[in-house]
Length: 249
Image (cartoon, rainbow, N blue to C red):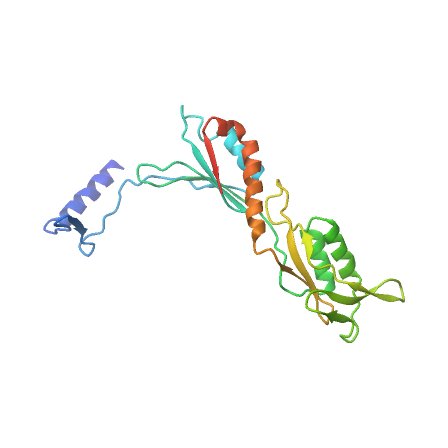
């Protein structure tokens, strides 16, 4: 290995003979990249980040000190809550002013197709599988499961609320107001924390298809990141007290 490095250095020296690549003009220093490209022959080596899908896995790794047991006084680590679905742990800056990413937690989530009208069956299945069963979720499930549209004449819309014909029995129908806006808790972040609630506009079209539209401007993301930070602060309290962990949003 050392012989290869020695040969590479000799080749670089021979190649650069007669080529002036560094120029100093008054107080400024310039490098002529057209004559040579500098390559670090001994760059710092980094391990590939460990990947997990839960906050539990991330905290277990940090509490185990698995990769720091051989170090008498391990450096402080930075835990960055990058998004509602991603948390990354970084080392401190090294001599080359670079950080190593030790572990990443990436939540595996299925996303509801907001803003798209779905047929009755697909809509009901998505609500059942991708939302916490709150009172508003149950109301939307009950309503969307009972919609009956005939000839496009059973839906009225005043721009704020909608009224539709819904089934009340085997042969009878009645009018019901669409529960909108609705406060719902879709699964959008790690399951170890409470799912953030936000408002949604529930709409149906003349074909009886249903849709949900997000109506909180993305404020839920901030609440989700705060919940993740609180969870990590509790689980990693010992390391935080020892100044071995810093958590940022």
